[in-house]
Image (cartoon, rainbow, N blue to C red; front, side, top):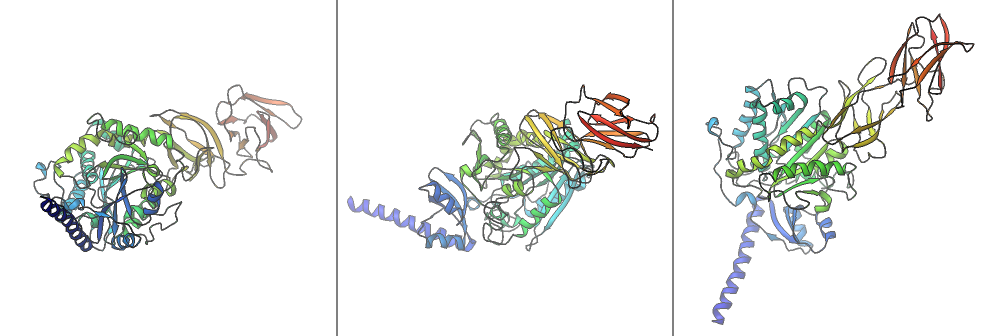
Length: 555
């Protein structure tokens, strides 16, 4: 009996060793390793995140990916990874080849050609809503494809970015994005029409097609996390705390394409869908101090997660009831989320939408049900907060101005107004804020603004050119109103503007001549008000308002 027991134990041990050997051989062929590592202390995660791609922390184990170089470096340092079957190789799934589109029920992954045809067909069938474009073509011939949605007039509206599958084997988000594209094209629901009227929406279902179709264009079996160059694209972005190349690699073609897109289009908000967990991971990933808009992030992330609980209370129920600060979970360096937030003034979040990386596609309708309302609500959050246009007070020309919330903004959280119409968009937690508008060559203006959660405040601002209509020495920079008058000289209409917010009611102006006689009086009712002085003879006059006096000439 003892011999039999010993034989069974030895057989089990040998079988385990053989299984690990077989997995190692298979992963060496793939060029990508999937494994778990025990975690003894939190500080060890900060060291390991520089050596491999941590995907998640489960209890006291890290689930990780590594390319061949990273894996052998771990072995050389004495780590003993427990190899796991790659998620995309645990089961074969029948693929949808694009035929019989009417019967397609979003329960099969598309082949690459079917995916490409679908994206192009939406733009062809619904040109009044949808535009198709490509960021570029990879060496494999595969493309980074986008659909763009609006009502044909994109200027002056918040721009929103939805993407998925930056890790090629995380496919739930890809299917969610395709189905959202379908809804934006085909639905006449007033809510969808309102989104098309008020937003400029960009969607890319798969931003790592070489990873997704690593096994060939007709299958997702064998899909990899990394791209064709063995790079984790979500570690390949500039990092404000860890340098321009935190992963030690050159920027990958996919990274450069996405960075160029973000430079070209000033996105207000974004989300990037992942798999492997069920949680909203908000900034920062790389940095322990909180994002300036941490309260707003918790508000919108809880809204997303809470809405999913209406369908399944166990879905997105971990961490802080479905949300987690990225660094608190585990640190990573070079994430796209941090790049977009810090360098591009865009509020981007990472949404982990399924525990299986490559789920059975028959479950895709379930994930759509869980996420659908949340996805629409997150889009609508882009419309809340403080919005408006910044223009030249004299010519009305749109300006590229900085919009900064005093004692609040830092680490890239301030926003800018953008041409061609000078629009700005600032999602923010409800509250009262001192907001400064500044542009080179113009006097800054600071306003006290109050906005509530789920509320839109429209605040248009005119900035006065430096020196325009002001006597030598410029306006007061003290605690007064910084009174501006223009044009100077005037032919009959004088504009009076205050550069800082003031209590306008009960503020009277007085116009006097050179010997101090009062000729005109009135009340300033707006920050930029015109006064008819055509009744005054040609000559020099003074206007006094809120304790400040300016000289002007009538011709």
